[in-house]
Image 1 (cartoon, helix red, strand yellow):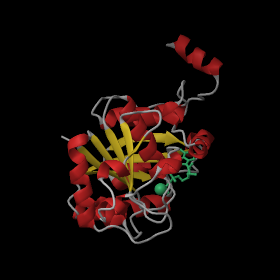
Image 2 (image 1 turned 60 degrees about the vertical axis):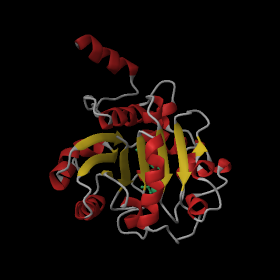
Image 3 (image 1 turned 135 degrees about the vertical axis):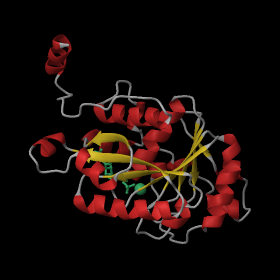
Length: 265
Ligand code: ADP
Ligand code: MG
C-alpha cells in the first residue's frame, strides 16, 4: 500500500519544504521507493533543497498536456536512486493544476512507489486544495508560535473536512532555551491546542539553513547533527517504528557534558 502524504501548514515559511526534502531522503535511504511532488505553485523550491534544479526538463504540466511521459518528468536524485522528484510547479506561475489532475498524477505514480510526499503551499494560499486532493494522510508542520499554531488549527479543520483523517504533527524550529525561559510555547502547549499525534520535533538550527543553501538535506550528513537526527527519527516514526523523542534541552555540541551524562548512566 502506497502512503500518500501531504506536507502542509497554516502559515508559510515554517519548514514544509525542508521537511519534505529530509523525510523523502531519509525514507529513500531506508530502502523505500519515494517520490516527492513539488505542488507549491508560486514558491517552487523543493528542487533547490534537493540540489536538482538544473536537472528539471519537464514538469507535471507537460505530462498533463501530453508533451512528455510521466517518467520523463521525474527527476532521479543524484545520490539516492530510490528518490525521485516530480516538479509540478512552475516558477512564479500561479496557474495550478486542478484537484482532478493531481489525482490522475498520483494514481499513475502509486504502483511504482512506497511513499508519495506532496510539498504543498500553506493552507490559506491558492493551490492548497489541489495539493491535498490526492492525499490520504497529512503532516502538519508548525513553529511554536501562536500565529502559526492558530493557522495550523484552521488547516487541520480543512483537512478533516476533506476526509484526510490520519494527521501527524511536526513542531519545527524549537528553541529549548526560550521554552525554558518561558518565552516560547512548549511542544506540550502546541499539542494541547492542536490535539493530533506528535511525529517529531526539530530544533532551530543554522545547519538547516546551510543545508538548504547547499541543496543537501541534513539527513545525508555522515555524522548526523541533532536536527538531522530529528528528521531521521521522524521518517522512522512515519514508517511505524517506535523511536523515543530526543531530549532537545541537552547541550548537544558539548562533548564533555555528553560524556558526563553517559557516565551518570
Ligand atoms: P516552507 O516550505 O514552509 O515555506 P521552508 O522549508 O522553505 O518553509 O523553510 C523556510 C526557511 O526556514 C528556510 O530558509 C529554512 O532554511 C528555514 N528553516 C526551516 N527549518 C529550520 C530549522 N529547524 N532551523 C533553522 N532554520 C530552519
Ligand atoms: Mg515551501
